[in-house]
Length: 255
Image (cartoon, rainbow, N blue to C red):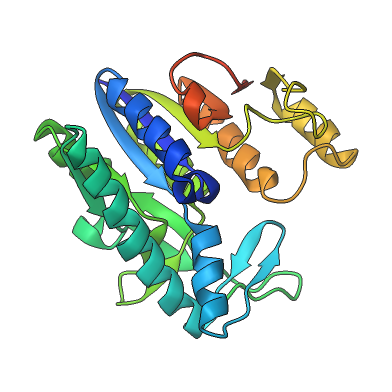
């Protein structure tokens, strides 16, 4: 089966015009599809309103007990259900999920490394492709929030790019999978100019671009996950702008 997995970032989610364009493009994708969303900027705003400080390391959020409550509410509730409602409005029969729903994504709490404790952040152990197929075969479109669980009752904040990559890798064992990362830029940029899109990235070029500082911050985990996906058999990975979905523009990640 041909399956397209689209991951949309928080900046797009918060911009009504960009989100509308993205969802219209998503609707036009032929065959089965899954949407994975972020929402970090909204979580940061809500946390600030509640007097909770947001801390980031290497583009990833440190999640203490208070922040876990915020991201669970924002990702699994506000953002997820807003997207589901908008998809329903344009004729896409969507169902919103966290990793705990149907036991779709199991993870473990990230261990302390190099003195950094990420708190209640999960690293994915397994994605249940069979359960996702149950929904897809019923002509439903899963919308995955960036939350997983550890199997013992704890929700874990999990990078949305990672969820998209791990879901793509799991489904690629039996299906023809394309993974698309959509955010506010037209691709991975060589400099601040939006016309400086890097057309292709391989593992070797990624290492060079990281070393010289061209790629940094939140783009690092995105490309790491994209590379992991193609190395695990995902047919194609594209990083592009929300309104370019489906037109083959952007940065293509290659073996």
